[in-house]
Image (cartoon, rainbow, N blue to C red):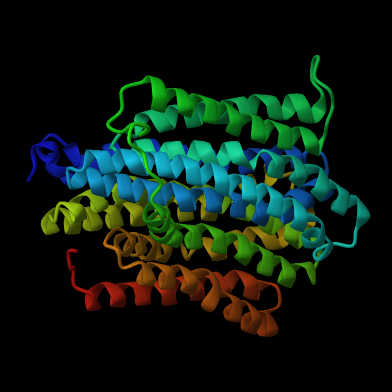
Length: 448
């Protein structure tokens, strides 16, 4: 073990306290990040059900944007942690510089592409001119300010990769607070602010992201961190860009498949009513608060796993997986209990109509039953990602949200109607959990 490793808590601190200390800040950050859409939806639902439907139809695109940001961010995070685990400080600093360049260029390209596809995307889902215009009003603003979101997530992951979880949490909190304050002011025109409706919700969201980015740059550049932007002797290395993309790809799949899944679910649900689409959008935001909070736990575990994989410490690597899985199962179980016990209260936050209540309450309880299985599979996928067995991580995420889920939706809706959509989630999670356990047992740990 190098002297650098001996001084790093990821190599020496008892595992359970380490996971808790490393996970609580990103756990809070992820909860706050996804509360953007949750809070937006609550306020927007007070405008009208059409407005809630518009935000629900927009959710796959906003989720895709976050997923692309997390793709590069997690790749940067794992590489920084790995190089620090190997005692390679200069390489870790080089990853920081490459990561910021990549996130900036990638973010700019993404804005251009999304501006070209938003109109045909929404045309495919609605022929209601009022809902269509609301979708455009909301999404154009979100797309134009995607770059600050991508850059601030990149810096968040850079700092988390060093083991510092507190600073990213605080600049995330600052952005969420600003979003929460601006939402009602800009939507309803309170005080001196103009009444902007759904546009006000979008402006509040991007303002929060931009404020977080400014604070993130300040923390990285002007405060003492274990890595820094490499400028002296810096040379572009395409191999680092490739590694960032390859390592972060499973995280992109895990998050982006949610966007595709919502789009496909909307295709099934729109056949029943726009109210069903509005409900599923509201549910998915509540579900994301649970699932992505657990994703914050994973973000705390990933640098620990990556560090100890780089340090070739098998015992601590396996220990981190064991404790992480137990915590994930408990958290998902608590989330399932909350949705099962308080479905009516959750739906009332979104001004649910009687029609939405009639099918929404049992639907929440059905889908919540799958959460514990999700926690196990997600942690195994993260372990595979940190040990460079990326293909298995990708397969696990594909099974859950695409390969099993969509055929299950198609089949079950033929026999059960709309309820088949809800039961398909249980089928997909149980099968995926079984596969992830099989993969873990059949693939013994090998160090590079």
